[in-house]
Length: 105
Image (cartoon, rainbow, N blue to C red; front, top):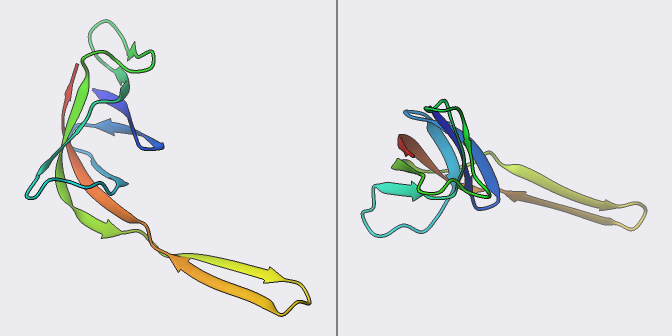
């Protein structure tokens, strides 16, 4: 069984046991579980796929927090021709790695 979830501005196709890197979110102290309640679609279930309008009613996905990490560095460069302007910046996005445990319909 798989599900398509929405988290922030991103959508993810997830299956049970899969590791997923999602945007970092503030969690309660010592929290080990994350719950995604914006489930857009559930597939491979009885009666065919269930598509939400916009979300599937009563469906949720629970996941265990594995850890936090930073994504690869992105270089940002700006240059103005013949003006002596050169700018170089870098950015590393903070992500949260979770393991999908259950897809509840």
